[in-house]
Amino acid sequence: MLDVIDFMYDTADYFVGDITAATVSPDTPKLLFSRKEAAFSLGLSLRSIAKLLKNGQLKARRCGSKVLIPHSELVKFSKFDHDLT
Image (tube, rainbow, N blue to C red):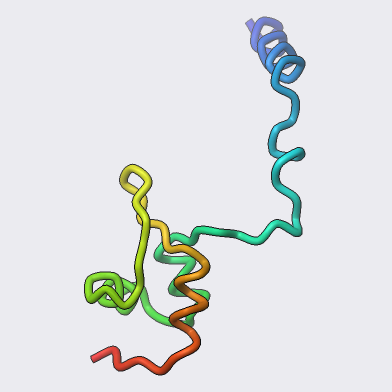
């Protein structure tokens, strides 16, 4: 059974190749951040990120059930003072 699985992976590599190595390099900047990553990047809590998203102070994209915040929104937000109350 393991020989069949190994064959399947080898065949897939032959036809597809290593896509991740070709498209993503360590120098490629991250474009979209999860709420948790955005909170860490801005030094805020997840609750603060939720408030900012709800109030429209941060804009996000949805991909299925995921909420993703563009890097440009984090940069824009970090340039100004904000009242989080």
